[in-house]
Every structure is written in C-alpha cells, then in structure tokens.
Image 1 (cartoon, rainbow over the protein chains, first blue to last red):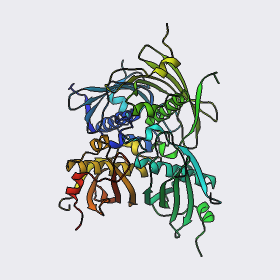
Image 2 (image 1 turned 90 degrees about the vertical axis):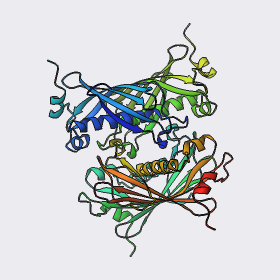
Image 3 (image 1 turned 45 degrees about the horizontal axis):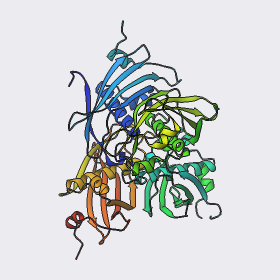
Image 4 (image 1 turned 135 degrees about the vertical axis):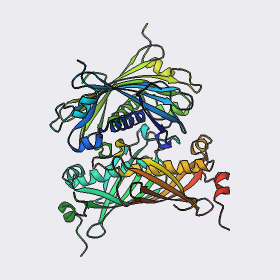
Length: 135
Length: 135
Length: 135
Length: 135
C-alpha cells in the first residue's frame, strides 16, 4: 500500500444488496462518503461538527467507475487521497478494493467544496493547512 | 375506505428490493414515516420546520406486522390514523395495502412523542388541538 | 420540454435528508435509477424481469454534477435520454430539475451495459431495436 | 456480558443520520438485521446462500423500543439471542447499547419464520438442531 494513503476496512451488509444479489450502485457512494469522513476525522476535521457550526462540506461532482461488484460476505477497503484543485475546490481520489484478492471494485474522483451558512464558498482553516494551495 | 382516514399512494422502486427480490424489511419504515409526515403536513404540521425550530417528533415504539411482501412494480397505499394515548404520547395506526388486489401487506402501530431542544417532552400546540386529550 | 424526452415527477421524502437538512448525495443515484427503470419500462423493458432471467443491466460509469440541493417538501422531475455509445455500451443522459422554479439540481451521465448469467456482455434484443447501433 | 450472548460492534456512519442529526428510525432495523445475519453466520447458517437456494428467512413481526438516539461518531454493540417460539417461529431478542457509557439505545423482539420457494413455511435443518423445539 502506498505510504500515507488513508484506508478503511469495511464489510458488505446484506441489506445493501439489491435484487441482482450485488451491492446496489448507490451504496458505493455511502461507502466512499463514510471513508472520506473517517479520513477527515483522522486529520481532526469533523464533518458533523462543521455541519452543526453551519459550515457544510459538499460534493459538486462525482465520477464513479464501477469495475466489479461486491456481494454478500465480501470485505473490502476504501482508500482516500486528497488533492487541492484550486482555492475553493478539493478532489478526493478513492478506490474500493476487495480484500480477498485485491480486485479493484471501484475508482472514484469526488470533487468538493465548502459552503458557509449563507451558502457562500468558505474553506475551513484546517483544510487550508492540510492541503495548501499550490503556489 | 374509512371516512377521514388519511391515505397516500406510493410505488415500489427497484432500489428498495433486497436479494430476495422483495422490498427490504427496513424500507417499510421509510414508507410509514413518509406517510405520517404527509399526514401531519395535511394538518399543517411540518416535521421539517418543527425540527429546525428544535422541536423533534420522535418514535418511541414501533410494532410492525409483516403480512406479505411488496415487489418490483407494485403500487400500494399507506394509511394513517392518529390517536392520543396520554398527555405526552400519540399512536399512529398505519396499514400498507397493495393496490392491485387490496392485499394487506403490513399493519403498524407507531408510538411517538415530541422533545424540545433540551430533550424534554413538549407537545406542539397544533397537535394538542388536533388530537385533544381524552377528558 | 424537449420532445420525446422522458420525465418522471418525484417528491423528496424526509428520510432522504441528511444532517445538513438536504437530500444526501447518494440518494440522487436512487432517483436517477428509479427514473431509468421507469423509462425502460415505458419501452417495455423491465429491469426486474430481465434480472430474474439472468440478464443484468449494470452501470459501469457515473458522472454526477451536483448543481444545487433538494430539501424537505421539494418536488422535482428526473429526465432520461438514452444514447448508444457502441455495440455494448449505452449512455443515459439525465437531469434533475426542481419543479417550483425550474432550477437545475443535477446533471448526470450514466454509462451502462448488460451482462448475461455468465457475466459476459450481452445486449437484450429490445434495447438493440430501440437504440440501434450507429452505422 | 451474558455468557453465550452474540454481540457485534458497529459504528454510526454519517449518511445514516437524518435532519434531526440522529440515526434515522429505519436504520436501526438495518443494524439489527446485519447483527442477526452475522449471528446466524457464526452458527454456519448463511442468509444469502439460503436465499439463493430458495429458502427465505423472513420477519413476520418486529417490536422496537427506541430508548435513546445514536449520533455521529457513536460506537455501539448489537446483541442477539434466539428463542424457539413454535415449530415454525423464532424470536430474536436484540439490544443496541452505546459503547461509551453502556446506555441502552434500543430493545427489539423480531419474530421470524422461513419460507421455501413455493412460499410455504419450511425451517432449515440447521436451525432445527440449534434451537430445538421445546418438548
């Protein structure tokens, strides 16, 4: 595993499967979101606290490549790497990998920003120090 | 249909099915909740507005009888009747009925109360006037 | 509205909101999927029946642009237009638009294919006749 | 902890919260179901395999007592104890307990049976040996 890459291990739950017997498409976004929040928490940035203070981290674009499916009993890990795209935009590069055999399940690129209580872009100071703007 | 009974028509969505090809158990609670909120809205009680004002309607007990299953393509209606149990408790008697043949799918009894911002029971005035306390 | 464009009206349900008080990111994929399935059904292609016969329509890539958020009480419509990309690939171009003011909420491009029971790409005959291959 | 009691540790995920900032009512049923499936798996009974063989474990009644709420960041454990009610019925007695302080969050009694491919009650042999009928 790449040095410095955040990785969270999770397990498929049967209620996440759809009638095809595989994890439903929309559930992967839940997995990705949970891993991003845990990643941010590991950097002392708490999504829920920010939200209560009126500072909302929001997704503005998601690109999701579905490579293979997860099914009942599968363990998998979700990785996160964050990049600064501009003053107001961040990209989260994420992968979902099946534990048993390392099979890539999904590659995702999630672009986000932060909005303050007035709905205006405002980047939390903590994020600024973690992913500084390219000079 | 019983006079004065609130009824909401809905339709199964494929993402609500689980690997058994039927609507997952937990999804019925979503249906019931949506019908309760629409019912309350028809009485000019808006769950979301109350929540933003710090007054939270909460469920304290749910009794759910699963009679039969809904599956892809099914239309159904969810009924709601509200009863006052005590100064602080309300019961919602609800049924889910398949449209095509009137088959009963679920009978539910949901008991709720309301909590203010300090977590103390506090019944919104509108509810008091709609379902008065038994003398 | 564009001639021949499929459009489905839906309504936000309160259980779809997250702690930010807006519809959670992953829920939009549910909306999009439901509209695609209804669209296909309008063309006599039933996702659930195909699935039971071992022919699975699957998403291989999703591109989702989040323009604005839906919240409690919002009605919206989801549009669908299908394009043939190649012998084995289809694109669904979709939009989510708020009813009250026509505000664009999401633009999506969902690329899919179909897999038979052996996991091999196999396009259902009905799809072939609806969206013929470009010559 | 009671000897022989099955217990599964889980953690709240932010997408499970609703606009009140607490875990949505219906999500607890997901937690309970996941714990039951893990419990059964620990007894070599796999819900998904049974389902693929046409033997469906189904819930016929759920009684859920909501004692307190879980919120962002909470860890909790879900316990499971199974009882035989009759030849065709089982009860799962379950609790959800917050890890930080042992606070009871939910007590549940879930009654289930099993249906074969023709929709008739049929108890898998493994269950019969694990929870024998009272003489």
